Length: 295
Ligand code: C2E
Ligand code: MG
Ligand code: MG
Ligand code: MG
Image (tube, rainbow, N blue to C red; front, side):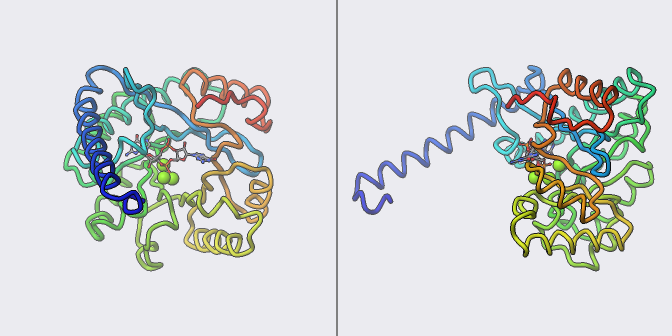
């Protein structure tokens, strides 16, 4: 587009790039101070069991409450946090916050089946030497049982460091927590590599769920993933379920769990607590009937 506008177009393009670079720099400076200024917040998105649509846990998702820019999504600042290494302290904060919150909920609702919490782990965290002691400390301090903590590792992060990633994941498994392979299908892991990964659950990326109900090719693809996962003894969470037709199809294909806007967007801890209460009082009732729908 810059070309068709002639010389002035190039100037505008350059200025645009410059502004983008400045914005990134600015954001990174702010990011460095965000932790001490308490600007992060953990949001929680329900994960439901497809068999009866009951709540089984939450995925914890970080949000940044920027003083001038409002709520900034992780898609914007996680890459920055990864490049700068800030993901390590931010990730530690998320792990502490999510484990402590889940333990409080378990104590507040002792009669319902224990919920689990999933926390995302970036490649930088996975290879950090302090990860294992930090996780042990978090579990000890929060009192959360490792069985109720799930770590989500993306397929690409798991592949980045090959055998080393497998060793680290095996060490994590020895603390008896659960491992999930996130965004599954978007990386290029081979069957044999997948077979060696010590994971409990596959999370099928939402790009494959979008047309699972109205495109035969997408349905076959998801069906193949499900068969594969089940043959390997793994369970499956389908991400990005937005429509009843998608839910019905996935249930029919035997997927165990689902997550998506159909049930609820990621919500604050206070709103998540309302979802727990509603699930207890109306077991099996669709969360979408009662879920608040904030950003
Ligand atoms: P993810 O781990 O795959 O998380 C799921 C993302 O999909 C979330 O975006 C969630 O809001 C969104 N989502 C869930 N259901 C639906 C749906 O039905 N439709 C659509 N269109 N989207 C849906 P979010 O919260 O913006 O997070 C984006 C990514 O940022 C996450 O993808 C994860 O990779 C990363 N992330 C978020 N929190 C953390 C964190 O604490 N640590 C690390 N390392 N990464 C994080
Ligand atoms: Mg995730
Ligand atoms: Mg995902
Ligand atoms: Mg993702």
